[in-house]
Amino acid sequence: MEVNLATVPALVEIPESTSINTLLAERVARTGDNPLLERRETPTAPWVPISARAFDADVVSVARGLLARGIEAGDRIAIMSRTRYEWTLLDYAIWAMGGVPVPVYETSAPDQVEWILSDAEVRLVFVETVAHAGIVDAVRDRLPALEDVAVIDAGVLDALRAEGADIPDQAVAERRDAVVADDLATIIYTSGSTGRPKGAELTHRNFAHVSRNAAEALPEVIDWDGARTLLFLPLAHVFARLIQVAVLSADTVLGHAPDVKNLVADLGSFRPTFLLAVPRVFEKVYNSAEQKASASKLKRQIFYWAVRTAIATSRAQDAGPVPATLRLQHQVADRLVLGKLRDAMGGNVVHAVSGGAPLGERLGHFFRGVGVTVLEGYGLTETTAPAAVNLPRSVAIGTVGPALPGLSIKIDDDGEILLKGASVFRGYHNQPELTAEALQDGWFHTGDLGTLDSEGRLRITGRKKEIIVTAGGKNVAPALLEDRLRSHPLVSQVVVVGDQRPFIGALVTLDAEMLPGWLATHGLPNMPASEARVHADVLAALDRAVTRANEAVSRAESIRKIHVLEQDFTEANGYLTPSLKVKRTLVLKDFAATVDALYEGAPAQG
Image 1 (cartoon, rainbow, N blue to C red):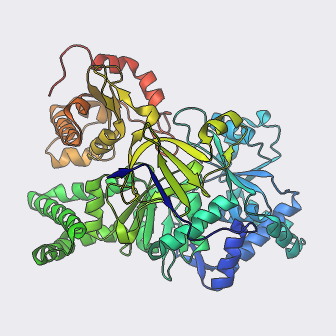
Image 2 (cartoon, rainbow, N blue to C red; image 1 turned 30 degrees about the vertical axis):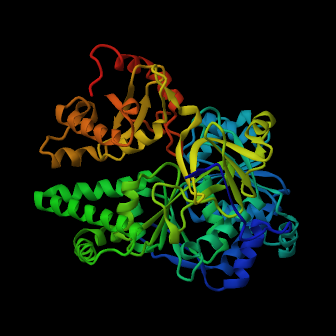
Image 3 (cartoon, one colour; image 1 turned 180 degrees about the horizontal axis):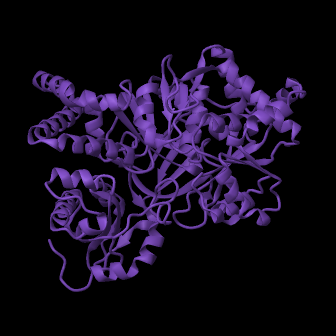
């Protein structure tokens, strides 16, 4: 039975005097000499623990340098870098000053950098490399508020520590104590998949509320002695930024992995107990394992048997005790296949939190059968990341779980998800009209579509602006079809089309990373994606993948024709946002002729 309103009471209320600074101070008081972070200087160096007290001292040291440079409370200071220890250090030093960090993706183009730095009126920007400084310099004549560009790799943090040596710690303490819950903590710019990025203003209350309530709601994940996570998502994204605050205010040890090319090795040496990722990461883990198992017919058969066993075990857990025969089969599958997958994630991972897009029930059951429970969640920049998340003790695969404590979810008459609570942002920077449109009577209009079950668990069904209405009047939400088709190892990206058309079609791009392995295991010579896109065997495999994807929808909603594009969608060519979301509007505009051709000539198959 569906309902249209669900409220989960807050487990922790946030006093007016609380800020992100308070959360760190409490961690220092609670676990002062125990590790708070671990860092290493090079990819092969050992992980070196940093205690809560030592990290706090480093924060104060850098904050004194900012004070010496004349940074005032409320000043906006940008950070443009990969995910690394220095980003976390700068965030906390700026917060200690009462400043407002503004994150910038390190992959951003000059025009994107210009927009964010100008709209936020950034006074100082920290960049990771000299190359990043060059990007800022290219637009600096259009940034009148910008006073300086500081390069992390050029030793600016050591310079700040030296410059602030004569500033008393008390000066930093006074700044810290002056920050209160409703002060602005950061301006995070949305990815801009539907237009120019909007700056979401998030307060210290937003971060403190989510952090403390998440620790209470998910103690077995982030708030126990021994919890560890390796952060590899971009810290410019709200999800990673929130986790950075949440784990430092709980009892988790945090590590940073700046280069995803070294991720497997980093996971093996850091050995996290939980991970934070987007569904594409889990798809890659599965597809890579499948590819390795395809070296021989026997290995392939064993792999698929182990996959079926893992999924069956997970599904059986939902029904009650797992039958003894299945338990025995799972033990064998674990020794042969599943344990190796856990080892690839570091060996100690028990939970993973997934957000950003639907994971899919099959992968959810598979990973739980492997021994890694994926807690699928849902949130936006405007809700300080998680608005809903599955709880370890009551996972409902296929949903994104109940509301985070302190939040209400309402399903509007047209199916739109509305949110209200202490995690919801205060508005868009310099955009009063957009703010008034998004926040009505205290409810944030997400633009996403969903349903609530009788237990208050949310299921995402699509995005309001992306609903396709066929010529026959059928409303189709493309997300489900896109996610199912994208799970095939050959597929990188999918854009479902069909608005005011006679049937549903799709534009597909090939995954160049997975293609060589797939070709080899199917007895085909290696070839570039430009050739593979028209190869009969590749097209036949994609047709079978389409058929499987269509099993989740009615015939009127099913994909009848696809076109495999010559190029993939990437951040470099402008078709993906930095958080890897497809810029649907731009794709439909640039590939309008391709979409038209999809509906010309031969009738749709199926």
